[in-house]
Image 1 (cartoon, one colour):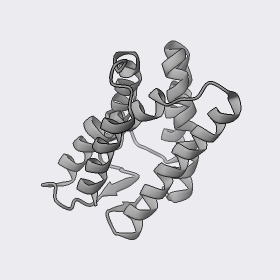
Image 2 (image 1 turned 180 degrees about the vertical axis):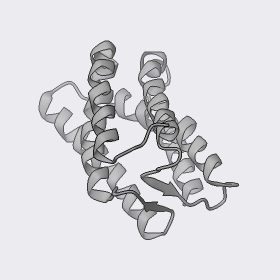
Image 3 (image 1 turned 90 degrees about the vertical axis):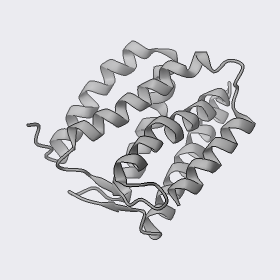
Image 4 (image 1 turned 120 degrees about the horizontal axis):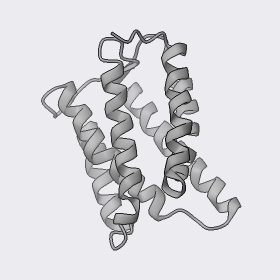
Length: 165
């Protein structure tokens, strides 16, 4: 399932992303990569979800593929197709939340992801609802996005009782 998702993401990005201007989205792609690795580092002993590998060697390789391939390419797709009008922007954000939630439901039902330490699909929906506007904010006002990210990360650490060693 993870391999199929990665291949579909690569094909979709190849077909529908703005590759001519990929550099203007690069910093936001790295923002997401850094956030993903920060999550992995902070929750090393208290993960909130676990990917169960299929064709990849182990969970670590699965995480790395998501972090350096799947997530950045979906962000390139998301930002390079971001509409101009507010109504279409809201629909675009909702579409991407729906895509991420649908993929997670498929991963959950197929046993490719399980939740731990109080996390559940509802939290994923809330997280995605926060994540996509934050990615767009980072694209247009990166410093503000970094400033807002600090209390979000701190709040998640408190909410899920993540012990920082």
